[in-house]
Length: 170
Image 1 (cartoon, rainbow, N blue to C red):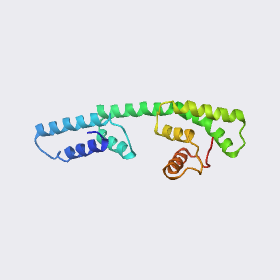
Image 2: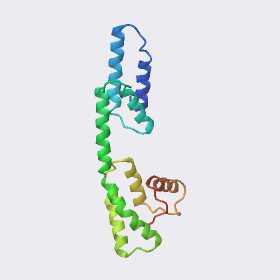
Image 3: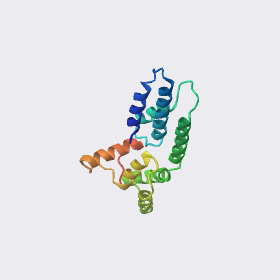
Image 4: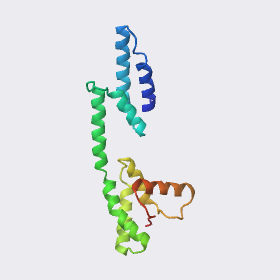
């Protein structure tokens, strides 16, 4: 299994077999489901559906917290903390007002230099969270009407993801 969806499909197929009366079969099926859950918790979450499928596999309504659910919740805490610590978020927050002033034609030479310096620092930092990719796109490319085709669509998506209403240019 390489995706959470594949794991979920295998897990639900096993779950469908649970109305069996044989205790040995029931134990074997439960063990296989646990193996799938443990593997799924380590797979990358690529969509909201992946997140819901992970929760469905690792939690039970009114049940005790399983070791797999505990591992999932620990992972969620770690990834949430990493997102909060993204250095690109802080750089982007400094960059955006400078880029907007530049687009308006009101920036000073020092502000333009700072804009470019922040951009250079951002592109070499690791991408910690999904918005970091959009931050890099918005900072590294001029987001103007002169972009055509796929580049223009990418720029629009980056602006939308980051809540930037006006085109920016640096």
